[in-house]
Image (cartoon, rainbow, N blue to C red; front, side, top):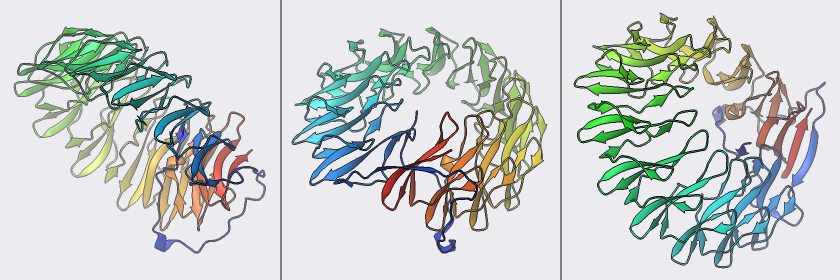
Length: 536
């Protein structure tokens, strides 16, 4: 489950153009929403009711004042009082809550209302729940030493903890962090120290997707190496930062390294051929294949499963991408002053430019689309065939339909924006936000603006106009049949459900979210009172 804070990308219309505030009543014929009062609790003053932390819109917590003390109100119930309180954090499943607090000259962490051991300090931002919500860890200071507390149990004292390295595995069974003792660094996996190292790269350790393995990069003298499950690998002059990657099945590991003046990729502990420059390796979805770009002399090529492909003047280092079924690989390359996309070693049509990260395979892996430019215009190339020319294809909007037959993207032509769905042009607008696709991939929605108003277009049909649309919280129901989003009209906010505006409030602090029974919930502030609003 997600944690929500009131941070949203909002499609904003200049304030000077807003009309005078007006009342917008609840739509006639719509089921009456249920209002549940959540706060403030009598006798307590919220620090900021809008700064509510929620667990997927269900449970809620906020910091309140009581005299010169602070406390956390959880689901309407006040917690213990302290001199200062940090931001509360819900576990991913929403069942547990933790926060750091100051008591006199000491710091401690409160988990589910129970204060933990006291320390001289706790590290802001280190408080961490495991993915299943059952475990919690944080870094603290005791005297001139530091410790990591896991499940309420302090670990060994160290001289310095590694910043940002505290991490649970995806199955929540393992916890790892780095620490310095004296002049040496170690990673501790489940409390067991790994080999001593001179330094540890400023990156977090990497767990394999099957949660069985842990790897990280470290320094040993003037060399670097990769440690896997506590075992140090071969030494190199340099390990490329962020190149460490496990295969999706967790059985294989690859990374890029430098040896002398040459670069190579290490796969399953075996160094590959040496090159003058190299890109980061990638695995196919089944983990059976790997690929990377490399330069030898003045020519570039892509190696797939160790076999070199055709040579080009330049290949974008991080452009190789496997199809979902792992049967095909594509990448962008330069030949003289023209750019091409290569699929399984076969070059496509020449264009002036292709856009980084735009290569998209269909779900069945049989089709490929990408954004290109030619003669000052942009276009989408599908299966090697150029589409209609436009002035701009909106970044990140290109995708295939679930049956792999259709292609959808947003574009600008002239001074107007539009969305093309399976080759059909949608209505034109002055501005278009990012596309939101329903869970079943059958429906498309996006925010747009016309004049000084914003609206949401669903399946090509424009909805009602508002002064602002909160584009970050545009959400389909799990079955894809319903759509909801926050909007502002005049000085008030409201939730629009299936095109029908709901009751006005001062702020929507969390949600909307669809529940399993099909109802819609959100948290809002109206007349300085926090409510949970449920719409059938």
